[in-house]
Image (cartoon, rainbow, N blue to C red; front, top):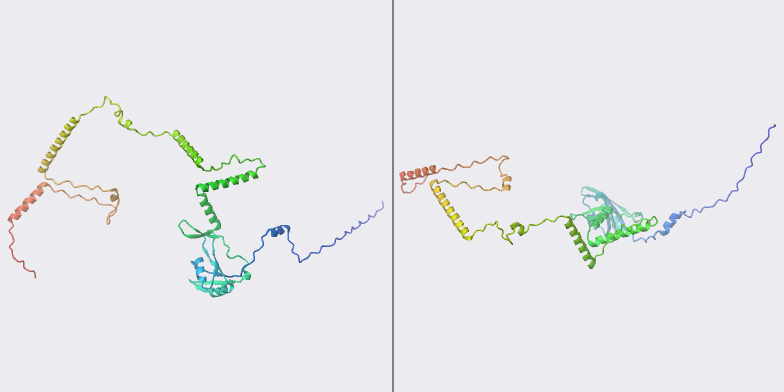
Length: 357
């Protein structure tokens, strides 16, 4: 077959649509931004212009109170913010000071720039009202009082947690009532939220009991019933009575008991006194025969005295040997010797003693 020429494809010409002209004068804003702008509150009118000074390289110990007192010499100080660490609350070494008039702030910045203070060169710069786009005095560091009564600086989150812990640890009746009511309202909101799923929280709710005159009596009765139940469970300890200690002698007379007459008691006492007198007399006779010195009295030392170490003593204390008691024979011989010496000795002649040169 002879070759056949295929027809060429015809070009389809698309109709060109007119291009939309965009006005560059108008700002293009998305729909979400339009909603946010519409909901935004109208901006408050700006107040009078203030002067702000940034002070850097502050020495340690130059805090809010000292800054206010020092910069008061230039003019009226409205606000002060010392930059502090959120974690420790310590000073970072720079601060912002706001004056009532910008002119005063400019003078203070020029004066304090390159000022030597406590071996530190202070740097100060003036921020004009046109460049005050940021709120320099907004901070999340709060001043609190610790348990020791000292003022410290902590973060806003730390202060909120301390406040909530203090509130939760308050176990007053009114505070407990408020907490229970708040928790019940939360559970009711959850009940409305999960109502479609068929979850019921009504069985979990325990509403607080409002105390009134009758309810207080009822609560006291319930407490008494609980105490009685506890007593029944635990075996009560029996206290010994007088009858248990003395037996049946209070109401009934037992046959086994022996009764003693008062006359017999008196005779026994007299006999005991006579025996004591005879023993004392025998002891006196023995003492006359042997004139021995009385035994040394032993002072009962307390435990604290034993534990205390006397000054000048070492770790190991030597035992003190008690003096040997003199026998009666030695004492008698000494007396005889003294008497013989006195009889033999001649009295000294009475006269004036010679003065020693």
